[in-house]
Amino acid sequence: MVQSAKAVPPIWCPGCGDFGVLAAVKRAAADLKIPTHELVLVGGIGCSGSIHNFLEINGLHALHGRLLAQAVGVKLANPALTVVAAGGDGDGYAIGMGHFMHAFKKNASILYIVMNNETYGLTKGQASPTSQIGFEGNVEPPFRPILTALSIPAPNFIARTFSGDPKGMTAILEEALRFNREGRGFAFVEDLSPCVTYNDTYKLWREKVLDVSKLPDYDPTDRKTMFRLCYEVLEQGRIPIGVMHRPKEAAREGLEAKLLGEKLGPARTDIELAPNLTGYQKLIAGLA
Ligand SMILES: Cc1ncc(C[n+]2csc(CCOP(=O)(O)OP(=O)(O)O)c2C)c(N)n1
Ligand code: SF4
Ligand SMILES: [Mg+2]
Image (cartoon, rainbow, N blue to C red):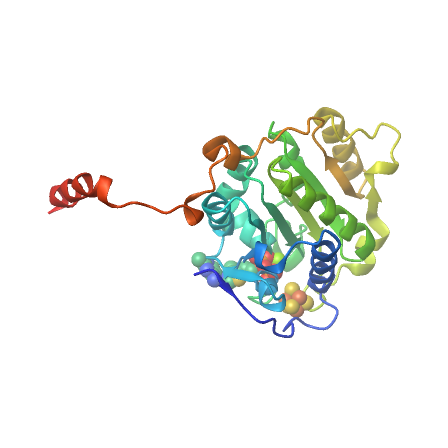
């Protein structure tokens, strides 16, 4: 399933916020000198999920809402790979919500980028779990992914970026990828990525974003403080961006190290079938 592919030109609408993510991923991978054959991008289903087609790396187009399970699988099969999962708010916070929550506690060293445009872009602009009340008849309050992320006590890297600030996004993606490559665990970066066709929020978000690192109490090593700060910023009608959690300890806390230790992983291990053959035959016979 995983294949190296030539990049094709993006098919996104001109001005789509996802272009910012594409440029920042390219820049961050180049700055960190990640060899392209060591980089795997698992895309979700949605406009955002086609991002791997526009990069000359290994790509996998996952099922809708299942990209995290597949990305964790790739990482466990070969922990030497740098694995990025990327998809939309519909993909991650609706059908994929169960996987989203568990990804924090599993803590595999992969980067998950959610391109949040507060709508289902690919299927033509319906309300998503992050849509504001009133958008396309939505009557439900929007889900707040950063607060959920901060409420799960695991040593993850958590941040939010804005496609209108490509420099800031690149710096954060670089830090997230470094965190992964040191085997420290799961990195979640939500990018505010306007859908210029169905929900053009560029102007509004430019006015509302607030970099939490500028606040007096800012301490990304302390979840309680960051939860309170982000909550307060949201209550003021502003949108917090920046690094929201950066674990103090530099330990290798990733799931892959806990399960495999120093082993190379099944994708790089010769598997001998002979010792397991009798057990396998018994299993098959039992199913007959
Ligand atoms: C199992 C399944 N259910 C529904 C769909 C239809 N579908 C395709 S993309 C999508 C939502 C896309 O929204 P989002 O994930 O926010 O991505 P965006 O297009 O906004 O980047 C839906 C519901 C599908 N492809 N598969
Ligand atoms: S429909 Fe929206 S999310 Fe999809 S490519 Fe166009 S601007 Fe981007
Ligand atoms: Mg979306």
